[in-house]
Length: 463
Image (cartoon, rainbow, N blue to C red; front, side):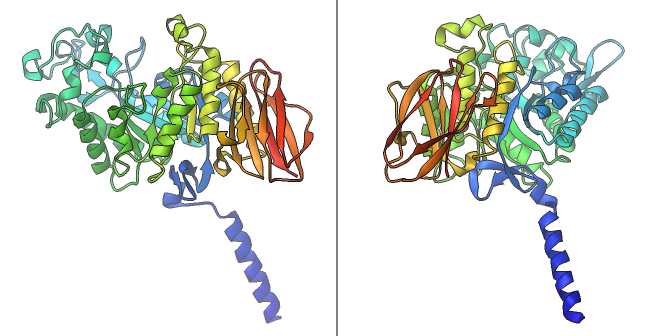
């Protein structure tokens, strides 16, 4: 009977290994070792998709229901700016009886909401990309009520802090001394001490959670010294946890020197965010992103897009083609192009969580039932299209192909050298529903047509 008991013990051990969940560091969000362009979470590769109605969800009372909805249609990714500039937002600092802020005392409501957001996100298997600083919090009208404004706190004067009473210019111009405090720039120790304490407070909470990515600024045109200081500070105060930090530069030109500040330093910026590429429409949007992937192929890292611009109701950008159609197309171009994350920006400048955004995410999740994005790569060389922006292809040649059609039209897919039958499954973006499968025969250039005005996919797999 000893041999029988031995066999049973082996089977039990094997069964336990199959069902064992990852623990410790394996739980953290990190690049997937088998394909470092993608993220891994809880030991498994994961594609991050999202769309929410605001960028600082921790401030909102509808947080939990919003995350419920996001999870229900396949979303697993949110952006969280630490911003407090919207009416009704809670501030990070406590107020005295005279109404002035004390930068040495925290407002528990702000920080409790932040931790509650991280807790709820991890319960929903949602990854949070935090942006520590947002330049739009500190200029124009927002500066008038800002706790760091010397007129609003008890901690320093205008002369001591090097601040002015007004900063009426757009934050895009980067004229605010708030973003020059580090030793290599203004060495403003008065303010920097409070900034350091604020970031340490963020980390004291966020480091307890395994679903957090860090971005230093929102679309900054700031000095490289500012970014370098905060990357080092966050990393040095990470309590030994292996965390992932990036900087989001403002330039729409991904070939610019500004973006090389992250592209050239993989040891410092361990993932990349090129959300600003969504200011670029059409085929150039794809080509610019592919430039980045080619540039970093020697040091592959996840490439994120935490906000995709475009909505017909945002008239200011319509003349540049940053429309609703552009937002949807960019979302899908990102995914077929190899991005690790793709998220619709909040209204009015993005689609947020409207029905079209929901159906876009659902469409990708349905495609994942047949093809995982980390199993394919961009192969526009296998596609003959009459128009630059009609169709995009990612494939594992001879096995699986995913074609995104931005609208109606036809293309030629190169199946030469790959004989046998393939199954074509089509799904419309407008309703996220599959059509009836078709069969095609390989071995030649094969025509594929699409007739959906709102965009569609053809998913082709070898039988």
